[in-house]
Length: 189
Ligand SMILES: Cc1cc2nc3c(=O)[nH]c(=O)nc-3n(C[C@H](O)[C@H](O)[C@H](O)COP(=O)(O)OP(=O)(O)OC[C@H]3O[C@@H](n4cnc5c(N)ncnc54)[C@H](O)[C@@H]3O)c2cc1C
Image 1 (cartoon, rainbow, N blue to C red):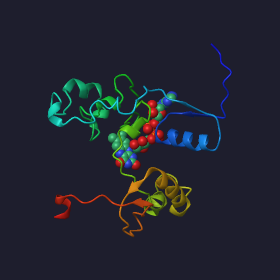
Image 2: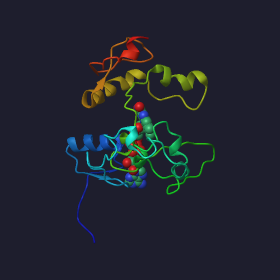
Image 3: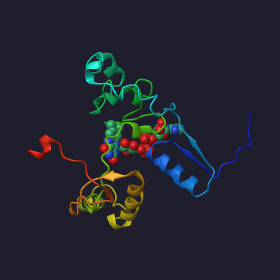
Image 4: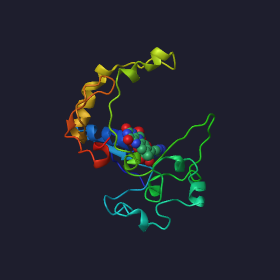
């Protein structure tokens, strides 16, 4: 069946990158199509383990040997367990060729890996942007921190990043919401 839909922009993938691109494009008035290869994840109803405690899983949250064999790469990620497994791809279903060892962690669904990430939203600094040049590895980044700082501001104001102002150049401060309180263990250190 053919249709006569016309789009100004087509975004492939609905992860943080594609999701943000689609947001910007639609806000600028472009008719935008987002193509996503994975399943649709419906808010709340498709988070079957979100409110489960470890003891409510069959193996206290641990995965089985069969599961680790199926997810032989994904299962090496620190947070791969019975509560998150369903948001990682099966390495047996989606194998890839490694010329050199390469751990490729993937989530094929609406939102991509934004359903898996650790929510650490730190800024790079010139420590990173100048590293290749200083170490003589790869190519020099074509940008420096000052070029990207306004874009960090722009994104942080939308997504909301909590943090405390520390004035450490190699770990730049952002447009922070108030920081979370430290817990007892952190306070006593
Ligand atoms: C466990 C874990 C913890 C992490 N923690 C952090 C953290 O704390 N801080 C941090 O900054 N980063 C973290 N990251 C990294 C961060 O999550 C990713 O860099 C980021 O989410 C990648 O976003 P993306 O949109 O580029 O890619 P993805 O989120 O992978 O999105 C790509 C999308 O494209 C879709 N797709 C792929 N191929 C096709 C196709 N052919 N057609 C249509 N759709 C397609 C996929 O299904 C997916 O939805 C973490 C990652 C993981 C896995």
